[in-house]
Length: 149
Image (cartoon, rainbow, N blue to C red; front, side):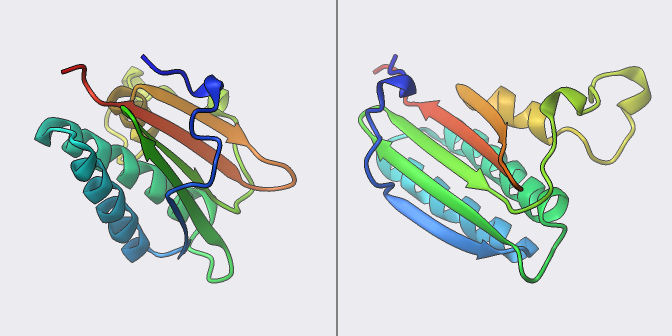
């Protein structure tokens, strides 16, 4: 398995896009990444997982990070090559600490309408990291590896 610490994809991203903080940006970003993943050879199940992870990352950035602000943007960078896909989604919100996110599987949270996005992203990608940026913003990094053939 490749390791992103090796900086295999330290060069320019294949995709570097900036989106408005609106829900239609979620659909656009998801479609772009799923199409690239399909070109790379990910199977239908993996494409579905990648799509959900992308949707959750973008929704978090638009809704929770930027709070639909007309002046704040969401940036998406994508690296692909070899056997892996790396996506970084960054918002311009106030940021958060992942350790303070309530456990969506706790009894008191099971019926809440939101709060499962991070759990889904972690479940559907191979590597997942959230980083609070300074002075503002949150950066979500997701890596998905092609299955060995």
